[in-house]
Length: 161
Image 1 (spheres, rainbow, N blue to C red):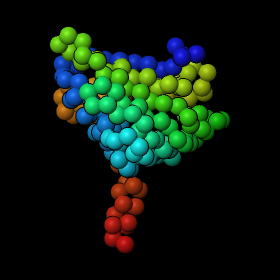
Image 2 (image 1 turned 90 degrees about the vertical axis):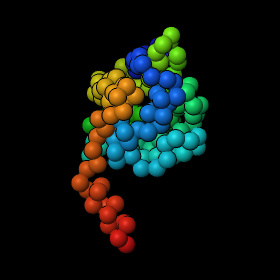
Image 3 (image 1 turned 60 degrees about the horizontal axis):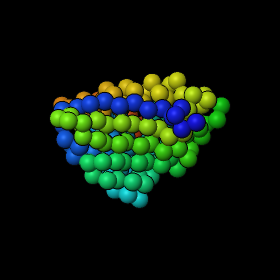
Image 4 (image 1 turned 30 degrees about the vertical axis):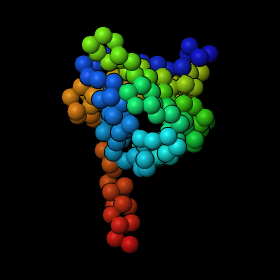
């Protein structure tokens, strides 16, 4: 079953360290609404996208220039029968030098074709990883989800209190 995990990869003309630094900054390529630390082992962070998807992730491995692993502690989808499909899965980034280029290999261990969300989630990961993350590493500019108006309002109210 391990060969069924969603995997994608790309090459960039940047160093492994540049790739690593981009990966551990998911606000710059995945979502500006991510809350919490994302760049050190043991850190827990929160992702949400509108009312469609919320999850809590923990950085379980972070080796500069080589590897990043996020473990999904909790997940909520509002578009699948089993809202928790990602819970207990691992999101793995492996970074390898390939001649003059750097390869980033992304694997969502546990995201398999049997999951109801597989088609939607694999398509989304492809857009974020092969598109936004690759662009961030290559050009310094990713295309993350923006912070939604409600998040901005809640953050503003919290600071004012």
